[in-house]
Length: 466
Image (cartoon, rainbow, N blue to C red; front, top):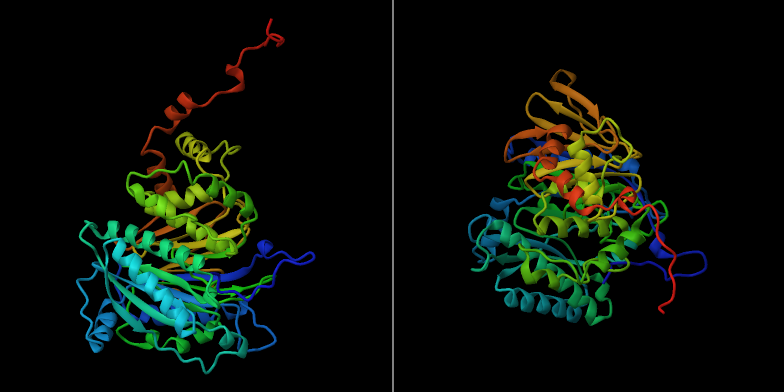
């Protein structure tokens, strides 16, 4: 299932212990105005993070790079018209970027499963599009494992009453397809991977150098390719093997750092399988398992956890605070409501801990957060023409100084959020004050927690039954 060239466990090497360090960044128009310039600037930002990536002995084979953008409806509609494919209204169709095996028989098996599961979930398969690529600049090692790349178009079914319900259904469809393909054990079937499947976002990525992303995917050069945001990532596999699927961004996050508690996190998620319930997902929640496939990178596993929480009704900010809480237990300066929020949620989800700078988006909001110790860099600036640029370092885009109205850095455990629907920046204090005040967390703790001071002072000696 994993698009991987990883060796098997041997000696002191274990692929489960892999981590990586990277460069991450985004550009967004606060008011949500879409343009091709943002896509171009996203690619420029990515190229300026090249030094945060790596190459192997082959100078044209990268560790991985990619870009996530909003759905370019006009571009996709025009491209589909060429094939005689008519798309419904924006928001009523989804596009999936799909990595497929190059073997025609295996590819057909994967596409057949996609078709069957889409029909079973009462969605509508609209058609497929071959994604044009130019691999002339790729190194030999990347070409040898290059997948066949297609886009699948899916229409909203009658049982999905709105776009959010459709997004949840797409998540359910994708997980079932991934698990079904894995069960086939196809020869070279590991080439199957779905970088994105959404009505709101589209991911172009691969085992590429930062400066190869734009040339490898000619789509990105089209003037009709517009977006109000661009999330980019350059991977540095410090002690890992580069693969097509391990390139970032993932469906909702791009990550610089490592999750040091990963094995415990995965065990915790697996243990919830038979107790988890969701009013929003209903019975569909049981179709998602295994939620996190073995052999994924720590970032991919984290992305799966974010997806589950958001699909289950958590806001994007709430999900990130649940998974990467700031240091709260010994912080005497923290607001009591916020402390109660973290304390209550600590019983629901163990922290995914480790040095991390994570950028995240659902296609409407985009933001970034740091781990509780602030062990990865994240700098941002705000301009007078409503742009926010965040990256692992300053200077990733040439912005005249007179246009910059704010320049700062993310602090340990803090969050930056831009809402393109509301058209504003939501700062850390406002974001967390709102979430911590939505429910009476202090009262819930008083009703459910048992403190040592509440136990009897003495317990009589136990004796066998008479």
